[in-house]
View 1 (tube, rainbow over the protein chains, first blue to last red):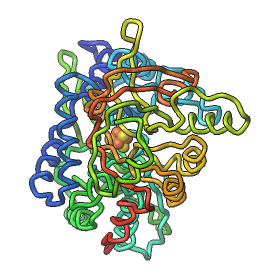
View 2: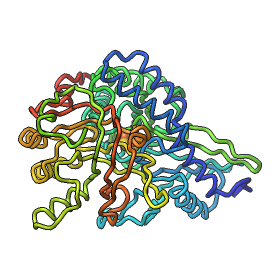
View 3: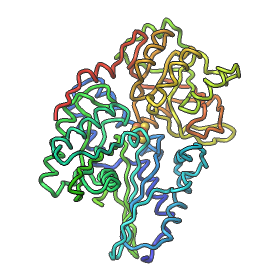
Length: 289
Length: 184
Ligand code: SF4
């Protein structure tokens, strides 16, 4: 573990406060752009109300949405095993101070301890490297969007068309439930579990970060155009703004498989990243993990 | 303005935009289950549910002196309550349901029968809605946790709310769905 200028739990509190109260600027710009071209009057009202809410949340330092989700953490760089407990400590503190809604319950008894912890929590993905920094990222989205997550184990013969079909159906079947317009994360390949993880991780990258793979870039653009041409619109009430961006990630998979996962991020796809070196902590609102 | 009369509610048509002033009660999955159970067994339910405006919402609320302050209070996904809502509407004569994402045809049937509408709030617009809540008048069933408990709010010009399902069985969601372009 590198020497830290600030304790991890405090950094986690800062991350959760920043992510919940300030919408990433790339998503804010995308909303503004959408409001500029959207012609449907009902859709314009929805977009206007969202942007108004974002401004108020930032000004008042309050969570922009009451569903502060089950935050997913991504840890990268140099760290040791104690980081889990420290992130948990930060999450518990932030639950009281930001405040966050106590969301976690036992899946069967539905018992809620009020601190956003419990067995298996917090949700953390680890990526240890030899770099001289520690990066802690957090992604927040509510159950409205998380509940719309889909995984399909397609046949390899379904190909690119089959993948696109599944993505479009997943978004349109979700309708207004995940509070569109948001970001669509797509994972293609890997093992089933990796595929879902990739689709969610994709939501961490800023909308203006271009996909380096030309094939994937084309697929993202194509899905973006088709989804916005679907007519679903903001909150599923009609219009030409259904998504603000599409992000695709791939990994090699079994020759007999074609896994596809879709993670839908609501308009309130909240993210924050802290890059920590021995002397400084730098905060940003997104990163290609 | 609450209380809403059946006549007022039946006068609302899909696509109308309204602002609500008056009382609303919150209720999600657990509240529906318990309220229906209690009513079936003749046990009492907290005041304010009968004839109410039912808000699908699990707010963030903090203690403020002796009372409460609402920090954030946007709508939750209504479809989770699809299987419970028809009985809820019929038993308690609910006049309006506020939520997001819309509800099933069975809920629409109960709305037509009783005289009730579905009002779509802007999903995630939690701070704006919290600002329109001028008073927390009461809290019940706190054992269900902050999100699932019953909160009674007094609102002033809460909105914009879109009449997305009316008492004649029309649904804006259905209209949009039937026109969707699904081409790959
Ligand atoms: S889907 Fe997102 S914006 Fe909508 S209520 Fe849930 S967290 Fe909030």
